[in-house]
Each structure stands twice: as C-alpha cells, then as structure tokens.
Image (tube, rainbow, N blue to C red; front, side, top):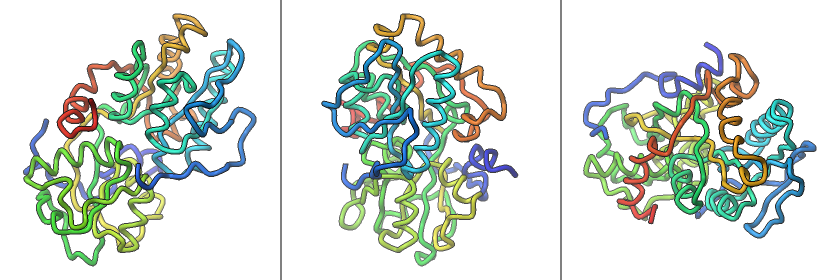
Length: 317
C-alpha cells in the first residue's frame, strides 16, 4: 500500500470500527519555528504584519495543524507549483496558531488559506465576500479517530462512554477534526465534552496529541484520521497508542479565498484557482503531499453542519 493511499484511507489502515451507537448527523500551539525558507516563503507573526507588495502577489497561509517542517514542505510546494501555473508571485507565510490564521485572513494579510471546517466558517463569517474554492476528495468524507494509551486496557469499540473518566486531550481549541466534531459525537453519546478529569487538554496539533497520549500525559485523545493514517503507514506511531473509535463522516478542510485578492488580482481569480486545483493530474506532488487523489469544487453550504455545531458549542458567534 502506498503512503498516499494509506493517508487517504486514514482509519482504514487500522481495523475499521462499527459506526453503531453514533448519531449521524489557544492554549498550547504548534509553534511555527524559524524555518529554512525557500525564496517564496516569509514569516507572518501578527495581524499587523505588512502585506506583500505587487499586484501579482498572492499570499498563502494555513492552519498549523502539523509539525512546522511538514507544513513548510507542503505549502512551499503549493506556492511554487501555483506560481508557475498561474503566472503569479505566490508566497507561503507560516502562522503561529489557528486564531492567527483567521485574523490574518480577515485583515487581508493572507489571501488564500487552507482552513479546517470550523476555522473556515469562522474566517468566512468574519470576512464578507470570502469564497471557498476547493477541497480534497477526502474532505467530503472526513473522520476523526479517538486514540487511547494501551495502559487503559480499553479495546476498540464504538461506545465512547468509557472515555469519560480518562485524562483526555483535544488538538487545537478550534480544530474541526481535533475538537469540534469529536466534542459533538461525545455529547451525542452522553459524555460531557468538557467534563474530563481536570478538564480536557488542548495539545495544539494532531502530532502533539499523539505524542502526549504516547507519553501518558493524557490517557486518551482525538485527532484527524488523515494524520493517524499517515503516521501509522510510516511506522511512526508509538506502540503505546492504539485506535479506539472512529467518528461518522463530515466535511472538513478547504481553501478559502479572501475578497481583497480578487480586488487586486481580478474577478476571475476564484474560478482560475478552482480550475487549477481540480485539474491537478494524478501523481502530482501537490496531491501526494495532501494525501488525496484530487481536489473538487466546494461551496459554503457544505459547512452548514459545522457552523450549526460550532454555534451550539459556543465556538461560532
């Protein structure tokens, strides 16, 4: 099985668990450390950062949901490929946390951002005129996985109630797959998503969640299935961490384009970007790094469930 296929299948790398029992429906951060940057990369550290100059500049950003080195390689590749294809000066700017990505998008310091479902909703509601332009094929059917330390003695199951008495960590506070949707499914099974002993932790990223559960700092946690699948396929998951349960599907990650970019670069920018993303051929390095077979068009209505759940949990106002 190829790494990309393992990433795409996510939780299917492990034995898939029954969905029976489910109802369908920033504390610690992943530090964006100083990186050895390619010529198209410059850091963004605050909402007041000065935007790049030049009519042809397009500023990329992304929520810091994984190790900074992984993100640097991924979005540096996107910037280079997009720049060559669309004849634009494209740069990638790492950010410090999820909230910074939303703020920098709202202020126009970032033009095109790879958001999770929840942060995409937050950014779109705060930025009139913002447009979703593409999501991966896997984001139409995304999942989270609950993991536990083997010391808990828990065997895989679809019943989430045994997690209630455990020390538990989410990822980022505004992560869709690392907090929002897992909290929703926990609540659907009668588990208070905030009621874990000592309160839940917030690791800041999916990789950090794995590390904390492996170390025993937390007995259980939740992360996005794609990261779980890729780390499992690569053999980098500590044997002390095992999958406990898998959530039902939901829409998640997507590219969101800000209105300032179309004002500066032309009204046809959104369809040009959608065409470029959806036209990437099989085996393209961008698709390989994103762990997908392709990108597909998307629209705001795909994230209505996330907006509704976000409002119910007080994460969207």
